[in-house]
Image 1 (cartoon, rainbow, N blue to C red):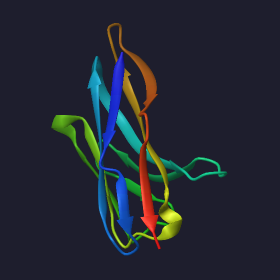
Image 2: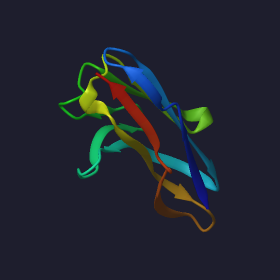
Image 3: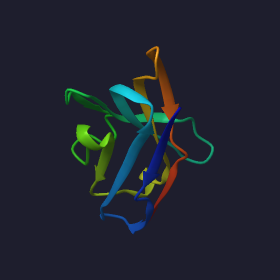
Image 4: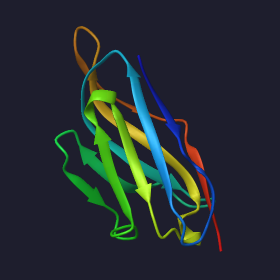
Length: 121
């Protein structure tokens, strides 16, 4: 089994910054990619950013130039640095990991529990 633990959410004024972290632990053999999603009240969950374990990153148009996803392979941790935050960035942010686990090795994906980000206007 694998667990994802997110941290770093909170309340921030518009224009401010936050950094989210998501650490994966458990019977991990290798991580393929990790993603950050968000879900605002009454809206569908949307993909915010994605990074492969060799460092290739992609972003939703709505956060390009403001958010940066990065990873620490040694710590099995992914980060989301959020700057120039806007009211519309308010949401619960979730991380997701695509990885190989266990023995015999198998592919699986896991979600974190979510962390609330609230941007006051």
